[in-house]
Image 1 (tube, rainbow, N blue to C red):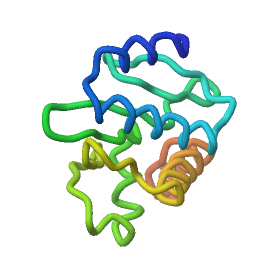
Image 2 (cartoon, rainbow, N blue to C red):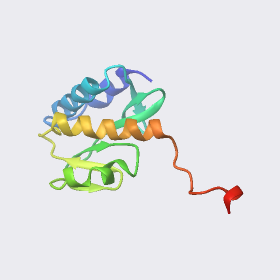
Image 3 (cartoon, rainbow, N blue to C red):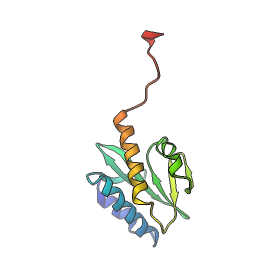
Amino acid sequence: MSAAEIDAYLAPLPEPKRSTLEEMRRRILTVIPDAEQGLSYGMPVFKVAGKPVAGLAAFRDHLSYLPHSGSVLAALDDELGGFERTPGSLHFGVDEPLPPDLIRRLVEVKLQQLEEGPRRGRGSSATR
C-alpha cells in the first residue's frame, strides 16, 4: 500500500472530481496524518493500525465517502440529513467536498468503533 496508488487512482479523473477528491484526501489526512494510504477494492483507503478508517470513490454522478463500517453513518444520522447515502457510503457532489468538521466526526466515530472492538452478544453461557 502506498500514497502513489491513490495518486494513480486520482490522476485520470476529470475535473472537478479529481480536485474534490484531492481536497477530501487532505482533509482526511488532517484528522489522521499518519494514516497508511493505498487502495482497497480498487478505491482509495486510509488505514490506522492496519484497519480501514476512511475511503473515497468516484462515480459517474457523485463521489462517495466510505467509512468501511455499516454503523458509522447510522451513528451520525442527525448530522447527515442533507446527504444521500447507503448504509456504507455517504454521497456528495463532484464539486463540493464534505465539510472538515463532518470528516472529523466520521473518522472519530470509526476510530472509536475500532477501539471498542467487535460487539459481543449480551450475557454469557455461564449466566444462563
